Length: 163
Image 1 (cartoon, helix red, strand yellow):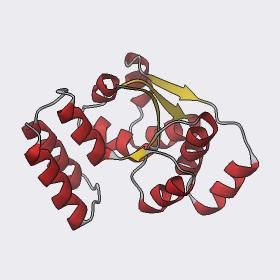
Image 2: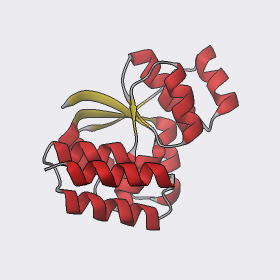
Image 3: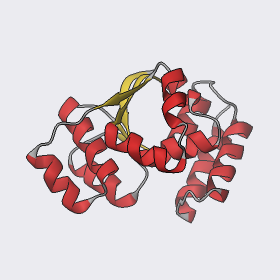
Image 4: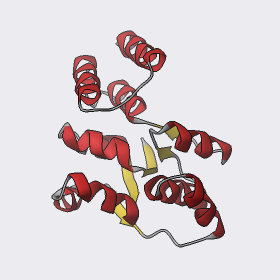
């Protein structure tokens, strides 16, 4: 289990819609959520604050303003920028799904994963089974998660190989 990770908004939204946020607590001891990400989550899910309080691993964090954050805000939305800043400043891995955010996170040398990577990790650690992961993936795609066709094929292939 990775001890601590930072999360951007998208995977949290997807997991919340699937009623699968507790999955994060099985994979990580702490998931740091920038305050700005919480605000973004509340737009589509007004009760998210109560859900987060119920899950001991989720922790909302204030991200101090810095030059790096100000630069990131010129390139990315506030949630992505704050999540990357928090991960960089604390030397932590990051959950992020959007392509541009992932590219910038890579430039900072961050270890990253996204929703699909979380599913693979959950199956590998026995948190959920392969069929559940595939159901979550299909449902997430129907709910609007965008994955490229090659990435989708790769994720299905990896899940198919996990015993």
